[in-house]
Length: 351
Image (cartoon, rainbow, N blue to C red; front, side, top):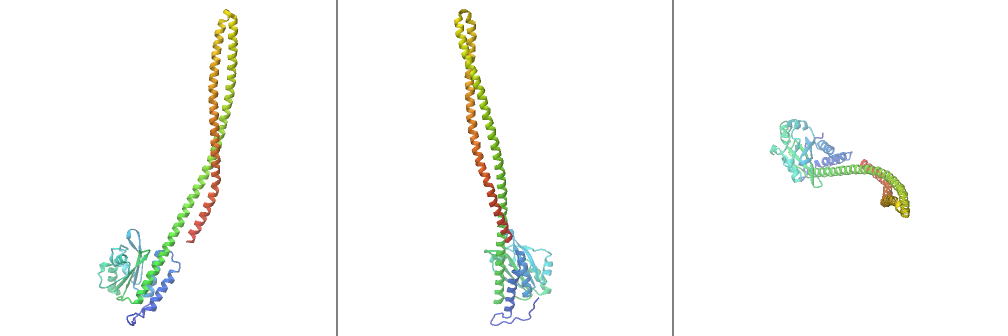
C-alpha cells in the first residue's frame, strides 16, 4: 500500500495529490473494464482499488435491496477486520434514515464526517472510532451511487487523518462516483436485456409447445371428421336401404288394396253367397290402406333423415377441409417459432 508523509499545497490546491488521484481514477477504470459482470463485483473492484491506490484505512460498499434497505456487500482495508470484529457481524444493512450514509442516500451527494461527529450518526462509525483509539481513524467520506435518478448503492471510506478534500481529491471522487454509477447502469441494462431475452425465449418455447399441441389437435380433428363422415355416409346408405324396403312394402300394400277391391267386386256379383267374402275383402282393403299410409310416413321420415345426413356430411366435409388447412399452417408456424427461439437463444448468450 502506498504511503505519503507530506502533502504540498500551492494556492489552496493540493498539487501533491493530483498524480495520485489521477492514477487512482485510471486504475478504477482499468479494473472495471476487466470483465466486471455484476454490481457486487463492481463494488469490490472499486473498494479494493481505492483502498490500495489512495492508502485508505477502510472502505465499504452498500447495495440497495428491497424495501429501501441497503446491504453491506464488501469491506476492505487494514482496519476492516478490526471494524468488523467491533460489530460482531452486526450492522450489515441500513436505510435512508440511518446515519450519514442514510443522509447521503437522501441528498444524493457526498458527505464528509470527522472525529468530532456523533458516533451514533453512522452504523460502522462507532466501531471505526473504537478502532481509532489504536489505529488513528479520524475522518470518513460517503458518496452515493446514482443510476437513473435513484440511489442504488453507497461507498464509505475512513482514513487515519482529518479529511480536507482538495479540488483534486474532490474531482477524483466525483469521477469515481460517475464511473461506478455509469458502470452499474450498464450492468443493470445488460441484466435487464438478458432477463428480457430469457423471458422471450421462455415465451417462444411456450408458443412452440402450444403450436405443436394445436397441430396434434388439428390432426385428431381431421381424423374424427373423417370418421364422422364415414359414419354419416353409412347412415345415409342404411336409410336408402330402409327406403327401398318401404317402397317394396308400399308396392305390396297397393297390390293388396287392388286385390281387395277386385274381391269386393266379385263378392258383389256373387250376391247373397258373397256377403261374407265381401266383409273380409273390405277389412283387407282397410289394412292395405293403413299399411300404405304408414309406409308413406316412414318414407317421408327416411327422406328427411337422408336430407339431414347429407347436410351433416357436407358440413363435416367442409369442417374437415378447414381443419386440414389449419393443420397445414402449423408446420410453418413451428418453423417461424423455431427461428425465433434460435434468435432469442443467440441474443441471450450474447448479452
